[in-house]
Image 1: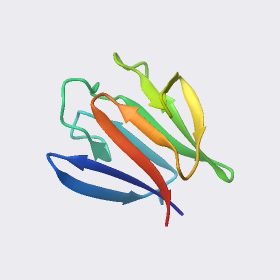
Image 2: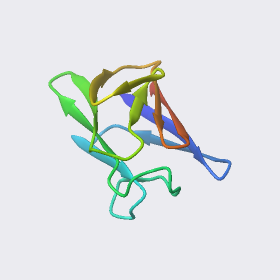
Image 3: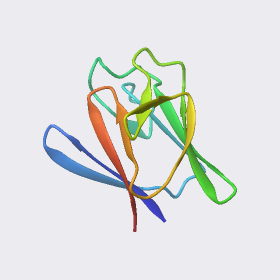
Length: 94
């Protein structure tokens, strides 16, 4: 199972990817709330397709990066590094 690891105000957070879809953004309606104005209200979604996980940019202002490359949609795997606004999000196998 994949996990996301990230920090908010110095506090490390870990989220197992168990739901078929995880929304990320600044708004409280998201599964992962990233509280900074560099993040759009509804910034990105991580979704499961078959045996793969994908990250999709939801037409955010500042975009999504996977391993320092800007993407609109990309598969993600253990070892990848996502960047959403100022937040660095690591992808790990549990």
